[in-house]
Length: 158
Image 1 (cartoon, rainbow, N blue to C red):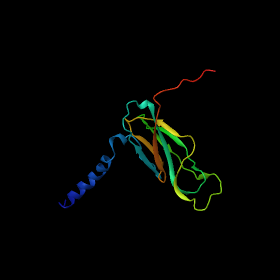
Image 2: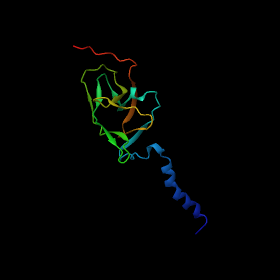
Image 3: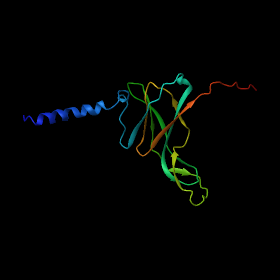
Image 4: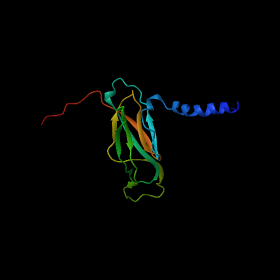
């Protein structure tokens, strides 16, 4: 074998291994994103009492809007990594925007984030595992941290 080709063959054999090494250890159990989808990962910082926190997942698109209220259609699903028991979230196909039909003044058009409508997707706060979300490639995923109040209030009995 030609001595010049040996380094090229060695490099070709190690490239697939280098690509695997680029995936963080915590993400290896999770499936790769399907065609047309993107995997989003949220690493949460540790909290003293994580049971008092929730994470709201917000998906949407930046679109040109006017004074009307807009929402996108879409359905969240919670799934489990087979054999591991780790949960992840998937947003199905995001439908067209629905809107109110108010007459808007001239010049009210602007770029704004339009979220997927429906019930908010609140998920458990867990800093020990990454929060993995699969969404269509043209969708942006955002999140908010919700915290419980320190004091609870008694309900009145009637």
